[in-house]
Image (cartoon, rainbow, N blue to C red; front, side, top):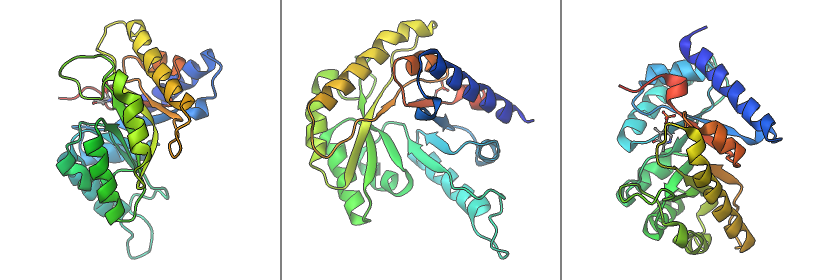
Length: 246
Ligand SMILES: *Cc1c(COP(=O)(O)O)cnc(C)c1O
């Protein structure tokens, strides 16, 4: 078994165990394998090892990689078999900071954008999605750590942003994403995860038409087990699957 497959299986079993510890159904938790700074070949290894959803942070890097993978591996060939020998598609999620002028590309390539943090960006995504007749799935990113440098909408403004986004016909708001500050001890991230879940509940309780709040994208390699205990439905894991990034 290759390294990626071994690490992937270990991560999946940790996810199952964390879910069981808090009496959650492990099937409710989606693994997003974060492949930023990893090559197309490495991503292919991950796909062959069983990864279905990939997370990318940088638009141009992601587009180059997705195109290379689609052409070299997923393109149908003469015998009508996909070259990679795998009869399933992979899905790409955008998890990096997104500027409005890249919204068009993001809408073209990504199934879910985790990082919408302003109405301006949401409107541009809506406009681009309308042009290609797509309903774009998004999450609102909350700046839960309240660090100046981190992107995300302030916790206090999240409900208002969600209500405004609810009016955009070509966007489907599916939940929230957030990142605690980095801690050596994952336990210290718990209050931040809990806060994100509380904000999600508050939005749910507002019964805003046209949005669903089923997803909480929270937890990375260092803290995903705590995030699962606090209700994460998507964990974004890079290092624990792919090894450290150069
Ligand atoms: C890089 C990154 C991850 C993955 O981090 P690891 O610690 O390598 O698991 C998750 N989410 C976001 C937003 C990232 O930028």
